Length: 339
Image (cartoon, rainbow, N blue to C red):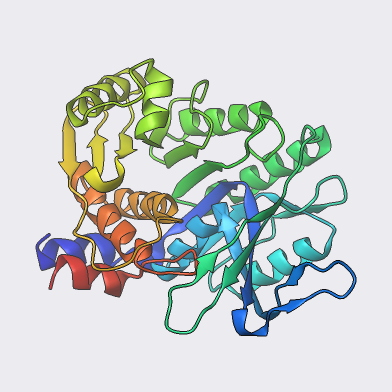
């Protein structure tokens, strides 16, 4: 990307005002010192001694973290947490982030706080090694009163925003933020404000979603379109193009080491290869960095090819950050794209 074009797209990132409708979780990292391991007198089992605990917003919160790193003016999290310790911690983490406006973030006794607890073995001179993760999730349907608050929160910020990101992170349908009712509200908003960028991602499937921009990985594209699970690059291009023409909205597909495919609303396809690996990597959070950067770039007038070039660079920055779910700043993107 030429430096003048990079500046033209990114110089107004400080004017971004984005609502994120999705499943915010608490990423809690437990750093373990293996030199302090001992044996429990009571059970005879090894004891891992935690020497540091750090927390940050995760899942949809990782998208938020990336928008903060890009210098967004205002970010409105539309989600929920429980009235529990993890919920207090998550709200505290959100409040610490510059530009985050959490007035529509729901705290409710009817939900528990979605939490990823990540024990990390921190051996000297080695990259952190993640042990088995401990997750806390909701397994029952999101109550109607919580849905009402989420929809009201979205309506309350509509006049303030220039983009909406939708992130469905839960495994069991209807147990998170992006329920059928919330999707209907998002679809109505997208149809009324066609100049407003709305872009969605779901770890299960985007099937049944309204006509908005889509971001997904290759397997999710295959599941959505009925194509073979292991789509080739050319097959991914064709499927993305057909879907974009059908939806009349852009479609983006991440292809791991093969980069990103993007199709505009007319079905024109662009492909950007992944940047070379520069050492040990951890792919956690790469997709969320892509989502944040697609939204930021598209909102600021980037063409599909330019948006995937920026998003690809963001993913490259993030995967080289070990022991955390990382972010990419405007300065880091400039270093990669405009050396």
